[in-house]
Image (cartoon, rainbow, N blue to C red; front, side, top):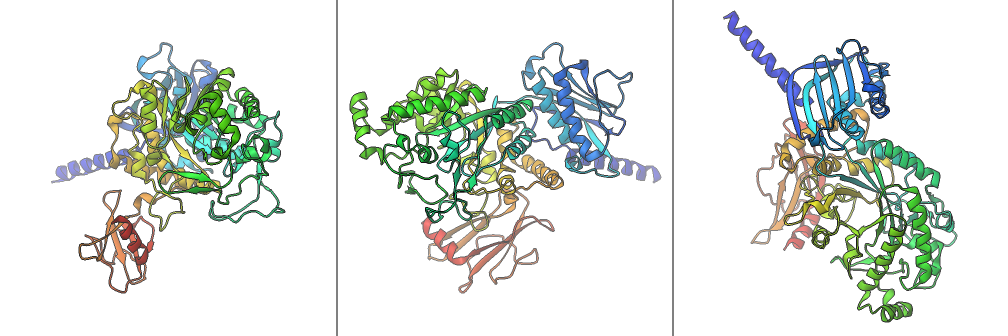
Length: 639
């Protein structure tokens, strides 16, 4: 009997250890191969950190690792370059003497035994990404900014082989609509590299601010970088008064840009600069109004309405916010801009925007009509194409390749241009079919400025991209030559983002999903497995005191009409295993309230539906309240 009890005890102990080990291993993005082994490695104050062979690049990565673990453990975590006499209790960062073909330039192998760990790679970038995976295998408290006392730093024994699916793994950061400081951009870089992103797309200019110093055009920053400070709902602000001070804004000097480029480069991130033209140019025109087709006085937009959006994808400008393609001075101006931009950013591409260019003022321009006659341009799309092609030649003359949003396809694509496809995947497919390079960033999946859940509870934006939609992002559409798809990226526009805390809320966890789409093998996609790992990274973010969205737990609320005309409300969740509870009596529901099991109809006099989700006995969703009148509106729209 005692033997039986002992056997059961050991089995239960083994199962418990395996379960604990399984919960410890929550790597994002999912690696190519992960083999679990028996045992654990204990990281202690005596653990040696080695940069093997005294390689300066390996030393840099090992130093990044040591700096991170030092904060939470309080250990000295000194990096050494001389091999230890014994190989016990050592973490080593080593470059392969003979390159391993499967690892490429960014791949790595990570092995952890009870006696130590080693990260190996062909190139230093691979060591860096292996280091990020190693950090994710530490307990969550490693994310602490202060020392965690009396903590056992146990890492599961594993063997990981990993390399990226795509070379272009990007996040776009709009620093024009709201300005973010150099320190905040560095913080953004630090967060993105943890999930193996390697491309920071900086949206540097727009109607609301010009954010990069151009020394040959000083008014771009003395005028174009500043506007009236307003808080509220962007796009609905009152028009600034003539005497209101232009105190909000800022810009990056040449020295700032060089510092950011170096900081990013040290972390294996390229920076893609975007100068958005010919539309989205109000800040430039405010500084140099002679560049417009429409003479007048302009100001940097402060968030007041100046575009009319028709809801069907069409729009027109209430104020001309474009550079004039018929004005030769514009091309001289842009040559000066791109000369300085090309000198500051070593990356091989410059993004020239080209999106959402309102042409209604061009229709009224005599200069545009004369240009069309001279160049035999059939329509205004060809006028924009004429402009884009000239931009391509200027950019090429600086030794760079031009990239633009998919609108640059309209009227004919400039030779050699690369396309960033944002209006779905159609533009990307068209560009690839014509033999052009493509980066996929469809707004249906990777626009992380959009709402993450129901508009009843999310900060208001015009549309929604839920976490599951982000996870469904696939950069290579069927029928497209995959060699022309450079990769993908998520785009963060900041009209409604005023500070870093809200920025974090919008970026995470949707950027976990995009990271997995551009790094991990397509065959390894598994939504439920991903959610389990996201939940563990939520715990890490709690320790790090970073903000994130829990919107994935909130129910999806659908309203429609029955055949008899009654309101029918259906509730679903994108995360499995949740229970939904609701009320119509104006009180806040918990798990002792009615549980949703099927479509519900509000009682005759009910005013508000309130819902909340639970996982077992734990409340995980937010309390949501939606007026029945709003549900009726949704039902009417659905008809």
